[in-house]
Image (cartoon, rainbow, N blue to C red; front, side, top):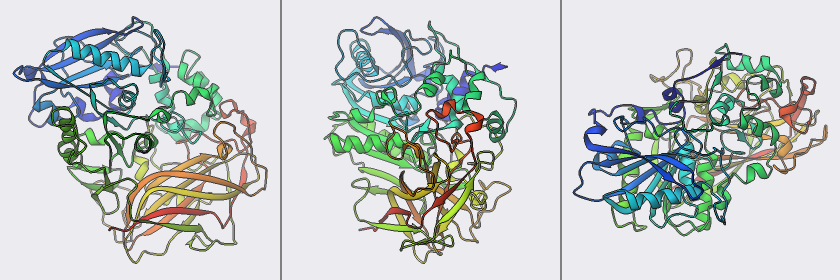
Length: 618
């Protein structure tokens, strides 16, 4: 097996905003305006964490500290090597703040052992540590040792750094006043590597980033990626067969791969690593940011906001735009996800009018709850405009229920007719018709779904052409009644906006497509059937027995326009976004054998239904 080492800048760019590594329009030079200092900050257990401090050269005033803790490297290393951009955005950079980057323990130039999603310890004793204590002690050191700081600290980050920002809310330092977790992981069993217990096979290559440990500080990458010899992701995983056959690419020295295999259900290993259950009595101001088409982290941002809102009395807001993972920090003029164009300067306006305003109010301004920002700032991805709300989900909604009826229709009355299809693990439904090898999936979140609608193993239900606009907000509940000839199955529900025949192409439209009759995926989710009653205790289906399967699809804010149709698709494979379910119950799918994978016939009953909240503007 050939192993490949990728340049660090390439790997980090897969997780972080591209603008971090690009010059601003005015070719602003960080080195001309900031001094750089590299220090080692000692934690309570003696471990030293490598920390880089950028301080404004203008020392005539005091500045707040903005801290980002990251597993993706605080480089470039060396006192004369500068990042081309620092801070959350160029506006905060140019106006002056003290920006700090820290390698978390066990990563890059920091000492210690890395623990992927390190468990939080609520009542630490002695030298016990977690990411909360590391953050607290880092902030304390910075306040005492960084010149010209004003005594106020903020944390921020995107993706994994967003998780560390979220972590900073636990046992928060009194000086921590503003926290913006952006696309932060909330629970590894529902974000990134799993969705409702289904393993996200499309993230398999990223296992290399998190699974290989190091014993000493390193300024170069120590992890390696397998070379797969093809750009056809679908065929690669289909040819490899059961997950156990992938062991030849990741051996036992990949700690995370071993953990994934050994903990196939929601056991204490995963539970202890979740942060959401600990988000209570939060004190700092919080602005959670996410993308409505973020393929990696939708669960974490929404659930973090909702739990803080329910269990704390702090300033807590949410911003969700028409973005994929990290788009809000990029410099793109035209904002599009795949083939769907949403508008110009959406990210730039957010950076200037929302993000900068949040940090300035709490770190340089009065810090009151009256920030001038809305409680919820959520983009309508159908009307293509921002909405400001006093709460999220907003007031003024009514419930709407559609049943999965006969003749491919969504009806208001349950049908007595049932729909069946054959699910064959040897011919799974693709999640995208693009032929490529992706590191982590992104574009599929708005992809055209005509290719799947035309397959016999995908059930389709849709409304007539809408005679007026219909705005759907908040979470979507799918209540399926199903049966299978097997003893296990996955259930995937997709919510789709079917465009009219005369919809116009844009410059983003792929060459082989037309936007006329485009089937835009608005939201989708999977439920691994064995977890339908409990994520802790998987159980088989009884062949032929009608069974309830409930699926929560993460929040949307989407207006289905007059002339469009709302469509629901139901299927049982989604490959290789998720791994293949053998459709024969085995205790651990990571250990399933070739003979366990069986073709089965699935039934969806006519009293299955989808529940939406329809927004009616006040």
